[in-house]
Length: 163
Image (cartoon, rainbow, N blue to C red; front, side, top):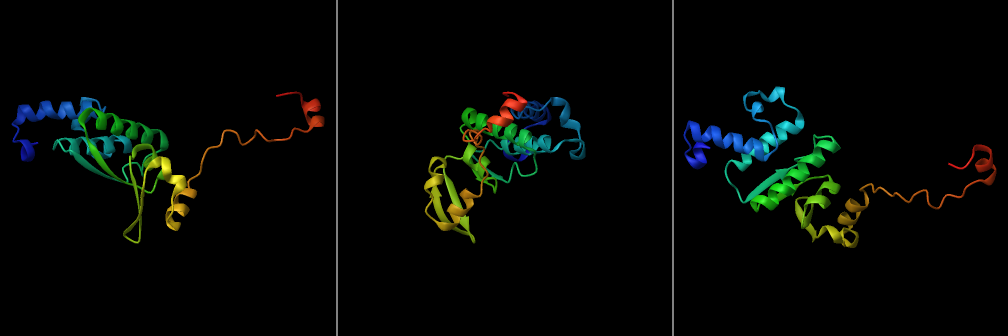
């Protein structure tokens, strides 16, 4: 805050409170050590530090990789919300393709350090490069209809009742 904006002590304190509020952290966390924070809190603190520079672009490198799915989902929702509110753009680097599909407007597939394909999330099924096809086909998909075609054994149904 001093480097980017030349803020004095009082202005810095006010801005830190604003940044903590932006990333949905209580002001009481400002005096804690990193070891006293959860993984999600640490990630939010790092995001607040990035926001302190008032950027237009933030590079998010594996921002959710060390987080459980619930916390990762909350972080992604926060990123989306701040993107809308602040007009931010992200370069999102991740191996978690479900997260990439959830947050990205465009996806660039890299292989051996080279761009092999650039597509939108709604076109991942139409990927053309062999590596892209392999990559996107490896993502597990929840199929809520997987039991719909199950043939029910009438003897078991009558024995155990209809459930």
